[in-house]
Length: 399
Image 1 (cartoon, rainbow, N blue to C red):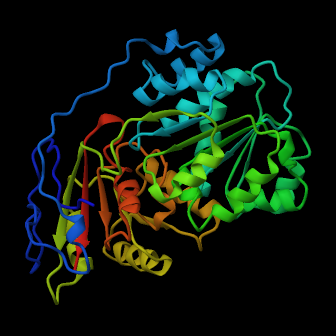
Image 2 (cartoon, helix red, strand yellow):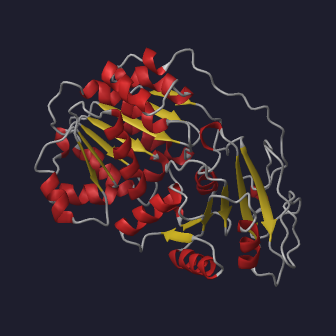
């Protein structure tokens, strides 16, 4: 992990000063305690190269109606992950795709799958699973925008919503079901979903879905998908210990790997901020956020209680802030996320529910209030900034 790495500095760095805190926004060269040594690495200059596709969106081998919808969304050319994944998925191959966050992975599987659904009856054909509610909602929104007016139907099943309403929704057939593992498993147990109906399985953020938190639900779902003909896995990171499990899920897969190992984005300027003994971390955070360059800030904390405390202190200081974590209702979480996207608030404080997959444009800074527990968490957190080739900034507090 690399909290100190400044892989590409873009623009003039702000001078940030804290009352009493011994840091100046410059790169720290001292090693943090609490086993943080592995998180430090000297900056290596990187010459950023932007991927330029040899074709335009209009050249993709998919239906003209999908092309029109993509063009209305402002898409001009496919990203690299899309360029290399669309044809194999169209042909029905299993696929594993690894690419940095913000590179268009969702479109990479939704565009070809939508094309293959055209003209087919809505008979529960594709099951898409994501680790968080917010990501599941985002995937469905993207599917609906890609297939607008094409007669393709989807349902989103997530925790925090009315189970009875989900059962009622599933009485009408749809082409695609998108959801989180727990709610999908609930629907299976109540026989609202018959897994034999689905022939295609997509695991978005597969490394998280195959870890100890979700693996039991996922493996149970897979075991009951007897008619599964295509399996697609996407993420920004991978866990080598899951290799055997992935091998059982996929048959002769096409592998699209656009990153070498679990490394953070080259266009994210990353630094650590050491908190000296006796200093108030909240004072340092406030000094950061009050700098004019901190326009749209995502703050991560490890616990739900910690998130609420940080949010409360920010509000007391006059900062427009809100929070999302597992104790908040789904409607509250979606409203807070929408307020952050639309810049009605400056700061969103969150647990790792906001770390994976969420596409929030122009996040200027990501701040880790504590050191993330592992490298994957760090990569996904800071991946909320510096998206789609733009520059970003990430700070991590180290005690």
